[in-house]
Amino acid sequence: MAAHMSRLRGWSRAQRFGIAVCRQYSSGSAYPSVSLSTPLPGIPKPVFASVDGQEKYETKITTLENGLKVASQNKFGQFCTVGILVNSGSRHEAKYPSGIAHFLEKLSFSSTAQFESKDEILLTLEKHGGICDCQTSRSETFSFLFYLFCLSHFIQHVLFVSVIYRDTTMYAVSAEVKGLDTVVNLLSDAVLQPRLLDEEIEMTRMAVRFELEDLNMRPDPEPLLTEMIHAAAYRGNTVGLPRFCPPENVEKIDRKLLHKYLQSYYCPQRMVLAGVGVEHEQLVQCARKYLLNVKPVWGASTPANVDKSVAQYTGGIVKMVKDMSDVSLGPTPIPELTHIMIGLESCSFLEDDFIPFAVLNMMMGGGGSFSAGGPGKGMFTRLYLNVLNRHHWMYNATSYHHSYEDSGLLCIHASADPRQVREMVEIITREFIQMTGTAGEMELERAKTQLKSMLMMNLESRPVIFEDVGRQVLATGKRKLPHELCELISNVTASDIKRVTTKMLRSKPAVAALGDLTELPSYEDIQAALSSKDGRLPRIYRLFR
Image 1 (cartoon, rainbow, N blue to C red):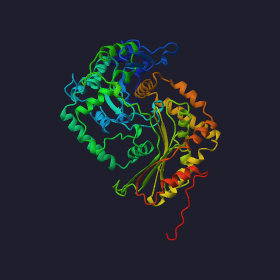
Image 2: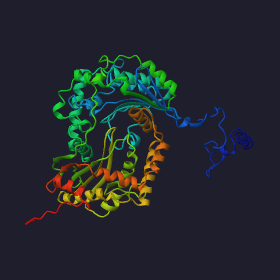
Image 3: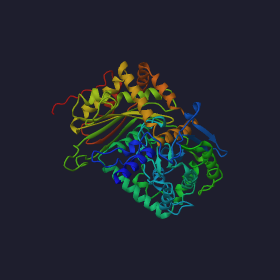
């Protein structure tokens, strides 16, 4: 009787939930899961995303009465990324002590008119799930079109972040879509109503001093070299001004000076409210509510005091003699290296030649001598094939392209033992000269394909789409869509690469050198090598070695 009742109960469960639910393990116990092919009882029918025509690609832009631009790109999902981008950065500090942008970065999302402290901001955002964070990021890779670094500090829950570039300041929050009103309110308060209390400024001074000390001690020299190459290329102007606060200016920056700077640059005409994963009408409504008739804490804006200087490429050399022997200690220390970065003027991201320069940068590629990988990871780029694979003593050879609204810089970073610096410099100058040769069809197609794949893969990330939308609209008032960029990349020819390279080599070189510089060639020798046909340095004859 008991066995009969057990069979009846099993048959009843099979009728209700399907045979898969009652599937037996070899041990005889019932399978605990439900069928993956039978709909669960009592669950509502799913709603799938659907779009018509070009709506899925469209970036909608609205300009409010006060000049603020609102840009959005809808993206299906329950999270959104919203932020305010300001046309302000270290390049605008010509009339002020350098370091204001660095201070504003550290002071971001501190106490405001509505929120007593950063902790209160965290608690407000945590109501929409997730965790919060606030970090900075290095300022350049390509331009706004190709900010292809993966913003690891953007996570899929709630977070706020402030990033200061040389030409743009960005305040951003990622949160659930239902919290959009709260997010825009918080952004408005953080940007326009910061308290800038004395204790907050003092804590910022300590943070800035620590960061400056860390910058000179870290094993990775790239941030310091990037500062140096910009200082050499644009000596004393615009993007050549220091992004990090100089030590002598730390005590000079106070609330009065910050308010004076904010009064000039934080005006609606120089701002964009960008959002990804939100309805455009809803974002515009929030902008009107929190950003249209808001009086900033520093009073009325005075955009007449804005520095409108155009970047002047000068070329030159910046050297820093430094003992690199004890940079990395431990069981496997990094050997003592000398780092050299050589750059030439390229073009701004507003010019048509920007795309060929981006392809050229991808063609040069490069990386570290211990990079692992194969096709698709840059192992067939010129700096790998011609430099790292042939010269085992070189530890690094990497190409970078920094582009701004009025100028650009294409440079190669290399590192090796201090005794082989001269040979390393000659190898890099020869690579610059060889850029003028006709690019092979296969390597050109590989570079274009890799650039397009990096672009499309990174634009799958919502925060990267946000930054792309915001920076494009801030700089040009519109946005080039990914398929337009891919078409421009596909149209680049070998003659385009040769033309832009020939033009680039007419400029004076910018050189940054860090470490033991005993064997470093003179600036005049490097300039002569880049003006020669083969890129070789002038020969030096010595009686004694």
